[in-house]
Amino acid sequence: MQKLIDYINQYAKLDDAAILELELRAETEKFKKNEFILEQGKYCNKIWFIKSGMVRKFHLHEGKEITAWIHIENEFVTSLHSYFHQTPAIEYLQACEETELIGISRQNSEKLARFPQFTIFANSLMGEHFVKIDTNSREFGLLSAKEKYDYLKQISPGMLKRAKLGHVASLMGVTQETLSRIRKQN
Image (cartoon, rainbow, N blue to C red; front, side, top):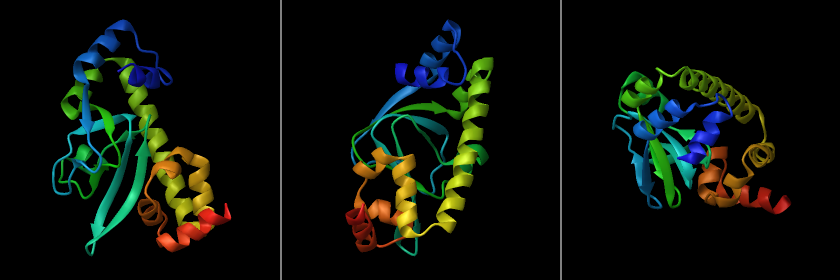
Protein backbone atom coordinates (compact mmCIF):
# COMPACT_ATOMS: atom_id res chain seq x y z
CA MET A 1 0.00 0.00 0.00
CA GLN A 2 2.93 2.32 0.71
CA LYS A 3 3.83 2.40 -2.99
CA LEU A 4 0.37 3.77 -3.83
CA ILE A 5 0.49 6.26 -0.95
CA ASP A 6 3.88 7.52 -2.15
CA TYR A 7 2.53 7.84 -5.68
CA ILE A 8 -0.52 9.85 -4.57
CA ASN A 9 1.66 12.06 -2.35
CA GLN A 10 3.44 13.30 -5.47
CA TYR A 11 0.17 15.04 -6.41
CA ALA A 12 -1.57 15.72 -3.11
CA LYS A 13 -0.18 15.14 0.38
CA LEU A 14 -2.33 12.62 2.23
CA ASP A 15 -2.97 13.20 5.92
CA ASP A 16 -3.35 10.33 8.40
CA ALA A 17 -7.15 10.19 8.07
CA ALA A 18 -6.93 9.97 4.26
CA ILE A 19 -4.31 7.22 4.49
CA LEU A 20 -6.48 5.21 6.89
CA GLU A 21 -9.46 5.58 4.54
CA LEU A 22 -7.36 4.48 1.56
CA GLU A 23 -6.12 1.42 3.46
CA LEU A 24 -9.74 0.58 4.27
CA ARG A 25 -11.03 1.08 0.71
CA ALA A 26 -8.22 -0.36 -1.43
CA GLU A 27 -7.48 -4.05 -1.78
CA THR A 28 -4.46 -5.92 -3.05
CA GLU A 29 -5.08 -8.43 -5.84
CA LYS A 30 -2.60 -10.89 -7.33
CA PHE A 31 -2.73 -12.28 -10.85
CA LYS A 32 -0.71 -15.05 -12.44
CA LYS A 33 0.99 -14.63 -15.80
CA ASN A 34 -1.62 -14.59 -18.62
CA GLU A 35 -4.52 -14.38 -16.15
CA PHE A 36 -7.31 -12.01 -17.13
CA ILE A 37 -7.99 -9.07 -14.85
CA LEU A 38 -10.94 -8.01 -17.01
CA GLU A 39 -12.55 -9.69 -20.01
CA GLN A 40 -14.37 -8.12 -22.91
CA GLY A 41 -18.10 -7.96 -22.23
CA LYS A 42 -17.71 -7.82 -18.44
CA TYR A 43 -18.37 -4.68 -16.43
CA CYS A 44 -15.36 -2.90 -15.01
CA ASN A 45 -16.03 -1.31 -11.64
CA LYS A 46 -12.43 -0.90 -10.48
CA ILE A 47 -9.39 1.14 -11.20
CA TRP A 48 -6.09 -0.58 -10.43
CA PHE A 49 -2.66 0.70 -9.47
CA ILE A 50 0.11 -1.62 -10.63
CA LYS A 51 2.27 -2.34 -7.60
CA SER A 52 4.37 -4.89 -9.49
CA GLY A 53 4.14 -6.65 -12.81
CA MET A 54 2.81 -5.72 -16.22
CA VAL A 55 -0.70 -5.50 -17.71
CA ARG A 56 -1.62 -5.57 -21.38
CA LYS A 57 -4.76 -3.84 -22.62
CA PHE A 58 -5.98 -5.34 -25.89
CA HIS A 59 -9.07 -5.94 -27.97
CA LEU A 60 -10.03 -8.45 -30.62
CA HIS A 61 -10.47 -7.41 -34.23
CA GLU A 62 -11.49 -10.11 -36.70
CA GLY A 63 -10.17 -12.73 -34.28
CA LYS A 64 -6.77 -11.04 -33.90
CA GLU A 65 -5.48 -9.54 -30.65
CA ILE A 66 -4.64 -5.84 -31.05
CA THR A 67 -2.58 -4.40 -28.19
CA ALA A 68 -3.75 -0.92 -27.18
CA TRP A 69 -1.15 -0.38 -24.46
CA ILE A 70 1.15 -2.19 -22.04
CA HIS A 71 1.18 -0.83 -18.48
CA ILE A 72 3.93 -1.37 -15.91
CA GLU A 73 4.58 -0.57 -12.25
CA ASN A 74 3.39 2.76 -10.88
CA GLU A 75 0.73 3.15 -13.56
CA PHE A 76 -3.03 2.96 -13.28
CA VAL A 77 -5.08 0.72 -15.52
CA THR A 78 -8.80 0.29 -16.10
CA SER A 79 -11.32 0.10 -18.91
CA LEU A 80 -12.14 3.81 -19.00
CA HIS A 81 -15.36 3.53 -20.97
CA SER A 82 -16.71 0.64 -18.92
CA TYR A 83 -15.65 2.16 -15.60
CA PHE A 84 -17.11 5.62 -16.17
CA HIS A 85 -20.18 4.70 -18.22
CA GLN A 86 -20.90 1.34 -16.56
CA THR A 87 -21.10 -0.44 -19.90
CA PRO A 88 -19.53 -3.77 -20.88
CA ALA A 89 -15.78 -3.55 -21.51
CA ILE A 90 -14.65 -3.54 -25.12
CA GLU A 91 -11.15 -4.67 -24.21
CA TYR A 92 -9.28 -7.22 -22.16
CA LEU A 93 -6.84 -6.53 -19.35
CA GLN A 94 -4.33 -9.36 -18.94
CA ALA A 95 -1.36 -9.86 -16.64
CA CYS A 96 1.77 -10.35 -18.76
CA GLU A 97 3.74 -11.66 -15.79
CA GLU A 98 3.10 -12.25 -12.10
CA THR A 99 1.28 -9.04 -11.20
CA GLU A 100 0.17 -7.40 -7.98
CA LEU A 101 -2.47 -4.69 -8.23
CA ILE A 102 -4.13 -2.40 -5.73
CA GLY A 103 -7.77 -2.12 -6.74
CA ILE A 104 -10.26 0.55 -5.76
CA SER A 105 -13.90 -0.03 -6.66
CA ARG A 106 -16.05 2.70 -8.13
CA GLN A 107 -18.10 2.78 -4.91
CA ASN A 108 -14.97 3.13 -2.77
CA SER A 109 -13.58 5.82 -5.09
CA GLU A 110 -16.69 7.86 -4.39
CA LYS A 111 -16.13 7.43 -0.65
CA LEU A 112 -12.49 8.51 -0.99
CA ALA A 113 -13.62 11.61 -2.90
CA ARG A 114 -14.87 13.05 0.41
CA PHE A 115 -11.21 13.81 1.10
CA PRO A 116 -10.01 16.84 -0.90
CA GLN A 117 -6.59 15.23 -1.42
CA PHE A 118 -8.14 12.37 -3.40
CA THR A 119 -10.15 14.76 -5.55
CA ILE A 120 -7.01 16.77 -6.31
CA PHE A 121 -5.15 13.56 -7.09
CA ALA A 122 -7.93 12.14 -9.28
CA ASN A 123 -8.18 15.36 -11.28
CA SER A 124 -4.40 15.49 -11.75
CA LEU A 125 -4.26 11.83 -12.74
CA MET A 126 -7.09 12.16 -15.27
CA GLY A 127 -5.52 15.26 -16.79
CA GLU A 128 -2.19 13.47 -17.08
CA HIS A 129 -3.88 10.40 -18.55
CA PHE A 130 -5.75 12.41 -21.19
CA VAL A 131 -2.54 14.20 -22.20
CA LYS A 132 -0.79 10.80 -22.57
CA ILE A 133 -3.64 9.45 -24.68
CA ASP A 134 -3.57 12.55 -26.88
CA THR A 135 0.22 12.49 -27.23
CA ASN A 136 0.38 8.75 -27.91
CA SER A 137 -2.38 8.84 -30.54
CA ARG A 138 -0.75 11.81 -32.28
CA GLU A 139 2.73 10.29 -32.18
CA PHE A 140 1.58 6.86 -33.31
CA GLY A 141 -0.37 8.41 -36.17
CA LEU A 142 2.60 10.37 -37.51
CA LEU A 143 5.72 8.35 -36.78
CA SER A 144 7.47 5.67 -38.79
CA ALA A 145 7.94 2.24 -37.23
CA LYS A 146 11.50 3.12 -36.14
CA GLU A 147 10.33 6.43 -34.67
CA LYS A 148 7.51 4.64 -32.80
CA TYR A 149 10.05 2.27 -31.27
CA ASP A 150 12.31 5.17 -30.29
CA TYR A 151 9.31 6.97 -28.77
CA LEU A 152 8.38 3.89 -26.71
CA LYS A 153 12.02 3.51 -25.66
CA GLN A 154 11.93 7.09 -24.43
CA ILE A 155 8.64 6.92 -22.49
CA SER A 156 8.68 3.30 -21.27
CA PRO A 157 12.06 1.56 -21.58
CA GLY A 158 11.17 -0.93 -18.84
CA MET A 159 8.10 -2.09 -20.73
CA LEU A 160 10.09 -2.62 -23.94
CA LYS A 161 12.62 -4.80 -22.12
CA ARG A 162 9.97 -7.04 -20.54
CA ALA A 163 7.03 -7.22 -22.96
CA LYS A 164 6.70 -10.00 -25.52
CA LEU A 165 7.89 -9.11 -29.01
CA GLY A 166 4.45 -9.88 -30.47
CA HIS A 167 2.69 -7.59 -28.00
CA VAL A 168 5.03 -4.67 -28.73
CA ALA A 169 4.73 -5.27 -32.48
CA SER A 170 0.93 -5.24 -32.18
CA LEU A 171 1.07 -2.03 -30.14
CA MET A 172 3.22 -0.41 -32.84
CA GLY A 173 1.09 -1.78 -35.69
CA VAL A 174 4.00 -3.67 -37.29
CA THR A 175 4.98 -7.28 -37.83
CA GLN A 176 7.29 -9.09 -35.43
CA GLU A 177 9.87 -9.30 -38.22
CA THR A 178 9.83 -5.52 -38.68
CA LEU A 179 10.20 -4.99 -34.94
CA SER A 180 13.10 -7.47 -34.80
CA ARG A 181 14.90 -5.52 -37.56
CA ILE A 182 14.32 -2.24 -35.71
CA ARG A 183 15.67 -3.72 -32.46
CA LYS A 184 18.80 -4.97 -34.22
CA GLN A 185 19.45 -1.45 -35.57
CA ASN A 186 19.29 0.06 -32.07
